[in-house]
Amino acid sequence: MAIQNKNLLTLFNPVSKDNPVIVQILGICSCLAVTAKLEPACVMGVSVIAVLAFANVIISLIRKTIPTNIRIIVQLVVVAGLVVIVNQLLTAYQYDVSKQLSVFVSLIVTNCILMGRLEAFAMANKPWPSFLDGIGNGIGYALILIIVAFFRELLGSGTLWGVQVIPQIWYDHGYANNGLMILPPMALIVTGCIIWIHRSYNKDLQE
Amino acid sequence: MKQLRRFLDKVKPHFQPGGRLQHFHSVYDGFETFLFTPSTTSTTGVSIHDSIDSKRVMIIVVLSLIPCLLFGMYNVGYQHWLAIGSSTFPFWKLFGYGFCQMFWRIVVSYAVGLGIEFAVAQWRKEEIQEGFLVSGILIPLICPIETPLWMLAVATAFSVIFVKEIFGGTGFNIFNVALVTRAFLFFAYPSQMSGDNVFVATDSVLGLGQGTTVDAFSGATPLGQVATHTGTTLQINNVVGEPLSYWDAFIGLIPGSVGETSVIAILIGAVILLATGIASWRIMVSVFAGGFLMGIVAHYFQTPLYPVSMLDAVQQLTLGGFAFGAVFMATDPVTAARTNAGKYIYGFLIGVIAILIRTYNNGYPEGAMLAILLMNAFAPLIDYCVVQRNIRKRMRRINIKA
Image (cartoon, rainbow over all chains, first blue to last red; front, side):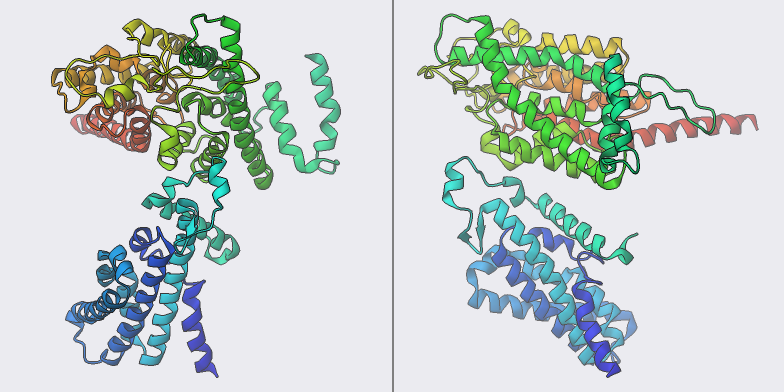
């Protein structure tokens, strides 16, 4: 029972209390880059969940055989291999989205969340908890991406998942999309707002 | 005046703790200290209080903006009458038209900005801060007359919350609130904030100024015209295609954002600010010096590739928002550099960068806004360097003696 509880904590803590983006402030760069629209943000989130979970498992399996001196290189090779697989799958089945994401899928290799989890968790834990940790952190990351993308797409383009949701009659009466929402700085401000709201509910996170 | 005092004293108990309206204490306090200089004194330490507190300072700045505001109202009417092809320009009708156009802008800007300030003050149980008095009048003055009111409201709310309240309220903001409002509008709604159709009001208001625009009408500002200019000889026209002279640009009968067109009105404001010692003459002088110098350099290397470089230095200073920015925006004591040497550097760089952006980036016909915001970000660094240099200098003096 105790072990199960610990596993649950590993899975769900990164979603809110220990969220990689809004508490550890990692992975901000890709958060700016891919959140202009909801669809690429979701695909990016799923890709990161997959890569992170499997990279965690693989590193955890071979953690005792990795020489300490070259562990970063080994981790990078594993992540890079997984990213190539994900990238190939995307180009095969989601060509349009993979065009939009362009270089950012490849850049998952350098995502701080991955390196952070591999170093901090997978190197010291068994495969199953590592897998859960990867899934949890990936979900935490994807969640923030989706919230940011929701507001940016809604206010910046008037659409959600490519479907127009702001009624045409608003536009006829002078409503206009907010062009600033499309620009990367606004992703930072939206993320800042999420952090603001999150911390006002979690007093123990306040500095 | 005495009656006002008596009224305030009469309603005061309601706002004290335990009174009926105790939750609105900060609202009452805000109005009381706005109307009367507070008589409270410090209880600890030795302090010298001047009766010119920040509310009094703000009011003087607002007063110095009045010439720009009044002239801007007249000019709004004047441009409209030109656009509908009228040959007579009845003063009061022109002014009334401009007043009607401007009135709601000022109301919206103050209602949104002060509304947020009051709400935040209540929420944090703080005194109401007075910083928005100036921003509230600056915002309508630096936006094009045709900006939709809801955009003005959204932009004002954004900049009051994210530029001021988040950093801790009046006196803690890194960037100039009014300028961020304009920057927000500029980047969020580019088609409504620049181009040919936003700087001249074309609708009639309350039956004033009826008529359709003439065929030759083009609402481009002088800088807008220059930025899209091709060819070697430069000619700036007014809204119906007649040539404009230096003198027109100096008086301000040109299309542009409401408050920025008239150099004369801005100079009157500058005199008030300098005579009362509120704005720093160091910043003002160095902004103009930097702009003038960069204007000469740009004009010396003029090329049709960057048509703005064909303007001479005097035109660079009189056209667009440069003078307004130099007098009212760059001198904002909160966001400017504090050290005297720092003020020269800060101002000079604003002038240089404003002309640089204006000349060598055809996408942005006006660089003053971006230049001031950029230097706002660097002002603390400039101050730091100046202070460090001074410390080093004095350290050396000590070492020599020892």
